[in-house]
Length: 565
Image 1 (cartoon, helix red, strand yellow):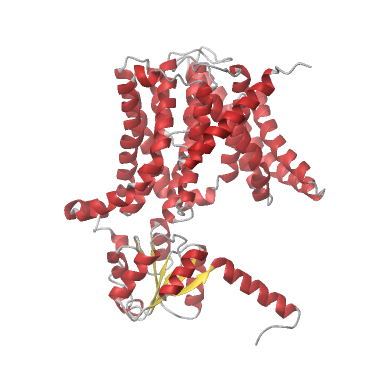
Image 2 (cartoon, one colour; image 1 turned 60 degrees about the vertical axis):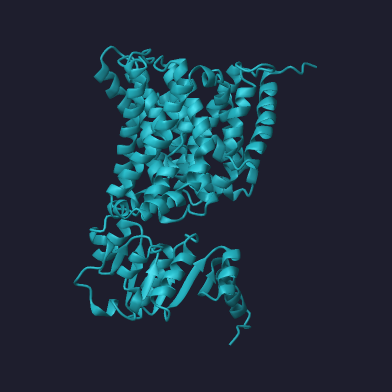
């Protein structure tokens, strides 16, 4: 029996070596994909020893791209993006422009062509969604205002890169690369045809797909077969990606992205994401391994200064641009620092773009190596960048002139208007965080005629509150000045309804210092945090899961006529 089967050999080697290096990366508190990339380097053609089949690995990587983009589409939420649109949309576009300009200028200085410089700059401008989500989740800030802004920013970046992947092939001939297959001599005609195909595909997906696929998922779910449901989800992702490429001439990535978007409209979207996750994870490993196989480690020795410049753009240039833009939109310093740290790395879209640039003859092989080296180094250092946020924030605030500049004290949303009624300035309730929980508390207080003031970092929410006649202050409640603007000195109750548990103690300390008589109520999902706060007797604590269990238990007891009186 023949055992030297290239497909099985490649898959076995990729998974085996990726497991080893991913394990050691996790032990070192690094993202596992750093290990996957290094595994690719080990089994790639530029390292001694076993060399996996590059052609098979690249085809497996295509499936990985499809499933990665499918996952992005599944998590793409217009509602979440809309909540932070005023900072995420213009901020991401401007940051992409700045980072692209920096990268392109560097490439042109090295003597590259315009097309290669443009692809290189774009590849350095977009951060990894995988790395970002993991970093925010590990720090417990994914569901906070800062986390939502960072994720919204990344969504805009992802959408921009999807557009780039679509438009780059028809433009490649003009930019100095190989003309795309089917591209005519007339550039505008080619672009019109490309845009028409994309419009046709999007129309079919949004009009037909939004009806057909949720219905199909429902029919499959009714069979009660978990295997069939998983198969349906994966078949939708891969088949739509392939069909989009064949019928409409768009990329696999775009087809898979819209497949995820369409399935998100179904009531089974969460189950679809959960069931497809293991397969998406497995093929994403193969994708990162195949990318690592393209990396030539000799570039680290041959071009150290160029790598340093690339890493400088990714970690310093792009981050400073993002922080400046967030501050320009008058968000707090900690928001600006969180967003800038989130963007201080590059990942999957950079690899996809570099591969397309190579295929179209735009990006030199050296450019791909520099992008891969920049990704490896920036992802590895990203956790250290997050660790540096608190010391940087303390240092900035210790410099009074710099602190006054970045915190924008003249912000009209940072204090209550002069016309605010007296009932909101004394014996009022202060609600920190006006998300799903805070809004329900506010509605109940309003119905009961109890005055309250909202403190919220999301400026769009503050603006909406004021439009609705609700007194609101924009800022971080862990800053004493912000709570003072909400008149905490004379307030009766402080309700901390934000999911961000990192600064709860700071908020409670400020409240106790400014108003020792104030009663504090805290929402938390962390049982350990709840236990510590109860031991300190610092506040009345409501643990999410515990309160849910109490409500469900009370209902069941009532149904059996055993309700406690």
